[in-house]
Each structure stands twice: as C-alpha cells, then as structure tokens.
Length: 368
Image 1 (cartoon, rainbow, N blue to C red):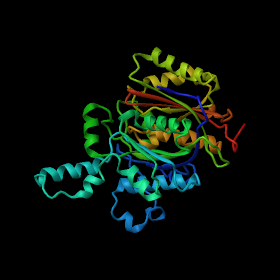
Image 2: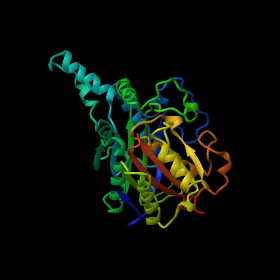
Image 3: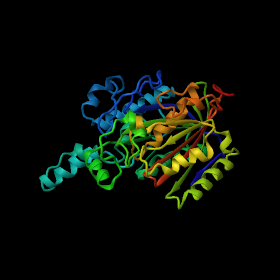
Image 4: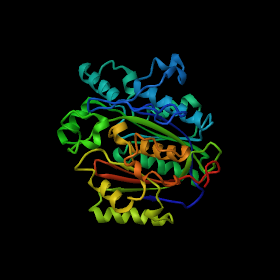
C-alpha cells in the first residue's frame, strides 16, 4: 500500500503522546529515560486532572483516561478545539476491560452484567469518548488491524484531507500491556525469556523483545501553521515480505515515488525491537542504504506493541521540529552531523508488518 503526494500536502500540526517515558509534556524532549527492570514497560501517567473533568474521570478506566489525556494534549498543542474527524487505531484494544467483561459473563451466567465493563472494552470506546468531550459530530472511525492499525488510520486521515472531506483530522493509536498477552507472547517466543533492562535491550543479543504499551495522537491538516511539526509526505506498508531483496525493492520504489533516494535521508528511525532473530532485515536495511544517516532507536523506551510505529512517527516529527536528536535514542553519535531535514521511519512488528513513513521539515516555520 503506497500513499504519496497526489493532492495537497499533509502537515502534522500537533501531537500528544503518553508512553513508558515522560513524553506527555511537549515543552521537553525526552529529558530523562526511565529504566524498567522487568520485561514489561507501562505508561508514565500525567496528572489527569489537568486534562479531564474530575466528575468524568472517576468513571473512566486507566486506558481511557490516558487516551483522552493524550488527545487533549494533542489538540492543545495544535491550538485546535474541535477537529472535523476522529480516527483511532489499536492492535488489540482494551484487553483488561475486555477480560473483566468476559469473566463476568462466565461468573454470572450472562445475567445482570455491569454495563461499564462492556462500554469501556469496545474498540471504539475511546474515539466515541473523545468525540463527546470535544463535541465533534463529524467522521468517527476505529481501526483494529493489529500490526497495521495505525498505518491504516493514517491512510484514512490523509485521504480525508486530500479529498477535502475534512480540514483537520485527529488520528491516534493506543495499545495496552496485559499479562494474558504477555503469557501468550512468551509461549510463542516473542518476548525475552530472561529479565532484561530496557536500557540494555540492544545489547542482549537474544531472541524476543520487551512488551510495551502507549498511545499517540496527531492532528493532520492540509494547511501548515508556524507551530506545525513537519510534513507527512508519504507512507508505505509491506506485509510479510517474501525475502530481503523484495523488501529492499519495496523501499527503493517508495523513495523513488517520492522523488528521492536513500542518500537523501538524514535520519533513519529504526523500529528494531531488540530481537536478534526478527530484527535482521531492519538492521540490514540500515547497513545497505542508510549508513550515512543518523540512526535512531526507540523500542528500548517503549517496548514492542502493535501500534508502536506511532511512537516512531512522533519521534521523527519531534526531531524535525526541534532540530535535535536526544542522546538517549541516538545509536551512533558519530553519524549525527548531517542537517536534520528528512526522516524515514522504518518499523516492523514481529517481522511481519513493515511500514515506512517519510517526514520532511518543509513547513513555513522550519523551512530549509
């Protein structure tokens, strides 16, 4: 799937991210890194009272609180009260609330069920909550497509803007670390068997990664402002590439369709997960095409989850907006001397879902 530059440009005008690191404050850019001793990274929560009415907050689950807060941070950052459309994406939804709902069905023999568990466990609960809160009566959709959920939501947002169906679109993702999924992933060899510090994830050289969670929201529009973050130029997805040459061909065709080559990429945001088996092609892509570019890694900060590519997009956009790369994400300081104008986010989820996001700094506020 290739979405490129046919039609008006798509700008990221605001963002709000809640993750296992302190990312909810848009005034700071990864000021410090939190270390986790186990194999599960969970979100650092902001003060919810800054974003949610206390009467409303007491009825919301942890995930809905974080999702609504992230969306509010994003809208505030974009200086926007009400978007024209809301699109959310999730790989596996609200697993904890779904578990409570299903358990209650079994324990009470489907009688006198608590409606709260059902309402807060559906995939579209967050997009509906945001719409009610910001009084958005427009397009509202949720994608639950596992490793491509966020990519599909962004594709939908870009089409809405380019077809002039909406001027400002709020698009975001959420996924939750849950013990049932962790057990399943451990059985399948997706997470590491040994306890691994997230700060030493890429030194582990073993199979498996760390489980993570997070939520990220962006406002996208065809209009740029002085506070815009960057231009979202294009995205491309590849599902289960047959072999490494096929993946290379998909990548080079994607860059060529956007009028550039690998040599034009200044920052390579690598979605490697610390899994020595499943990271092989991501690392090979970097060696083959982007040895000249600054390499940025991020899954030691977030862990792995189905919509982790959204954090990679936030990181790339933040680098373009601030023109800085925090030391905590820079793989090799020796390659950080190039101008920061073009970012390629290359993510993979379990070596099955590969996605490429092309970001450039060509906005009125940060033009080069």
